[in-house]
Amino acid sequence: MFKALLIEKDDAGYRTRLQELDDARLPEGNVTVRVSHSTLNYKDGLAITGKGPVVRSFPMVPGVDLVGVVEASDHPDWRAGDAVILNGWGVGERHWGGLAQRARLDGDWLVPLPAGLTPRQAMAIGTAGYTAMLCVMALEHHGVKPADGEVLVTGAAGGVGSVAVALLARLGYRVVAASGRPAEAPYLKGLGAVDVVDRALFSAPGKPLGKERWAGAVDVVGGHTLANVCASMRYRGVVAACGLAGGMEFPATVAPFILRGVTLAGIDSVMCPRAERITAWQRLARELDPALIETMSREIALAEAIPCAEALMRGEVRGRVIVDVNR
Ligand code: NDP
Image (cartoon, rainbow, N blue to C red):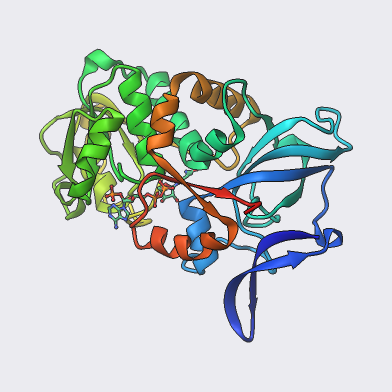
């Protein structure tokens, strides 16, 4: 038997509860993992609360992330005792996920826990942090250098935003954090932001082109925010777009792209190829200050993930939430 959050949807409605499940109910897969920690990401918040159509089949164990130790494996890459991380691949959406004490998965989805990270730290990073690293890698790939000018991070006090601020500052960029929570300015400066601006500056419908300010940007918000960020990029600036916390639409014009050579780089963590994931995780282990990982995260028990998902959806959670699935 193992403990898990289980989402059910039937005539009685949509509900998520902590349950004790029989191992026989675990899905198909060639690797069984004893999970130590999971996390809460925006997508998990949508799944647990039912506020977004994330879950594709019911009943579902949510949790797009997990870290743990291989218990049994029929996959050539993994043996009992290996420490592994899983992020994405539809886990927690189509395949039972990480908010459980046990998971059965496809070994092709797993990456090794990098040397230098504890399981707890890995989940303090989670999909949010790994996506932040993919955004940083996209800015670098398209040639944005610290000397090129300021870099903007939107949704900065959230999970992706917090890790993006810390990583970019560590790499020497001048990071400006956009947040709707002025009280979090000291936190964001502690992560390395040189300035914190009100997210309201970006949230209303704007002009096709604005004053050129940002050499690079990481956007988790979408909607008018993403359109306004594109409009205020410097010549040949690069925007890494990974989120929709403010909306799915993209009410922009082509002006920034055809008149200023702006690049819009789309970031997807779910199906990202394995080699890139391994690079991202190795870099996270090397480049993210462990003291800042501690600053930006807090730990909860498995049952607390349900109320915490509601708080996440209300935009009240700062940074990252680690879930200890065994308490
Ligand atoms: P969080 O909830 O931790 O952070 C989101 C932040 O966005 C909030 O803290 C808030 O920051 C800001 N925000 C929320 N609502 C609004 C709004 N209406 N307008 C403007 N800003 C808003 O979520 P995550 O960091 O985990 O995820 C952020 C986004 O990135 C989500 O949309 C998520 O789905 C997406 N994502 C995408 C991935 C991918 O593979 N492409 C992977 C991981 C996440 P503040 O309070 O500072 O203003």
